[in-house]
Image (cartoon, rainbow, N blue to C red):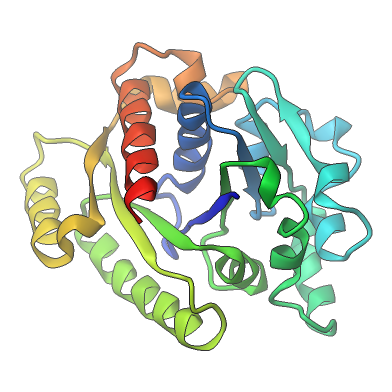
Length: 256
């Protein structure tokens, strides 16, 4: 039975998609069956997994409107070793269409029910806003992984996200919890980042993952080649960190 996780942060540009595709590739490397769900209309998780958007006949848009199943819309990323339920620009219009439909916040959950036995992990790449798309992700998930930079404004955004998760937990999805905070784009030479990192650990304790993802050029270059950094340069510091994170994630789930 798959464990379903949202990779979410209401602040943009914090590495949600990079975290999603590299964690997926890292989990695939250690033998896990993984599905990546791209809930962002920009479709970056799909492109970062090597899926050609011009050949995407069915997408998450069709799944949410119940004109296709996940099995029909999923594509295999042969380079990265996991499956992808891709998104395209049509998804931006899905929010308007979903407003008038019943079960509008639980459509993804219903669709995932048909494939949970086929995967060990489902990773949902959420858009950087609290929208109906994000709500579908949160209502489907067992937990949330929060990638964040160790900067002051990131702390401000984190408090908003924690409140959102509490509200969804109380009203829509009692299973939802914060699995952990992942420090990304980390540069230990910057004193402020060290201070924020220590603040996170003192406030959230073991909710902060031990793994730290460093700021790494090879991770930034990988999307232009259509592969996760773990595949693009497995020996880079960034890729090694994500492989370590995949191991830590798998161990954490076993103890939940």
